[in-house]
Image (cartoon, rainbow, N blue to C red):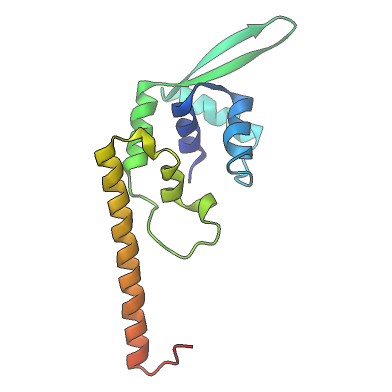
Length: 151
């Protein structure tokens, strides 16, 4: 799971200030993701340089300026490409699945796909799970052929 896509996904919801972004995504939803200001703000600058987001500087009297971030059309396209991609969704045993599972991360934002693409994504995932289950059954059969104690 990448912080890049979590930022783009959050900005798909609404524009946000950097501090609020950190609070909204990285503290509330993925509290142990482990991003700090020294990582977040350079990443925001990089996304802006890549044209995926834009920053609005809001001057405040007697206080530092605030930066509000917005997703661009290029950012929406990059996010949609990631959201539709099956990369990283292969099934394996994961106990911290909400933190590291690409498919579950994408599910948080699946409403941004049209219905046909969302259904296709879910069907791909169902097939991956079926394939994994078939692999488990085949492994069990091979173990039984070798008289391996199943318990």
